Length: 183
Image (cartoon, rainbow, N blue to C red; front, side, top):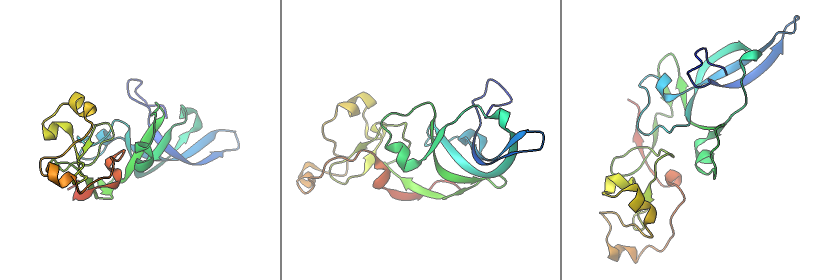
């Protein structure tokens, strides 16, 4: 939906209902999505560039403020997209606008830094323990990580690898620890 300030990105909302009155004025009832920077606590390191929070904030707007259509994917489906377009976003949290509370208030964490997965950041998977790591957290550059054929974390040794013969996963969404991220 069109922002009031042209310099800002468009607002994103889910259309719940479309109505017209007796003068053919078309209105849409919407449920707003918030960007991380619009929420209490603001944007954090693990928030992706295309991340939105589905809020409990409903509103009625003129249909003329609708600029176009976008797709808000589940987090899991977004991480499986081969090509992310300008109209693609994802949502992994619901947000209570009045209190700043998130649901869920816990999410999977990865790496030594114990941060949630950000689909904008490259991660590598250890062939031994199957944990996921940010290249910088294990002392390598992104370029070095992209050239890896095999990766073994600091806690696993080459001897341990003989026990593990499975391949790499495409993303860390399915293999995770759970940690508290919102206080």
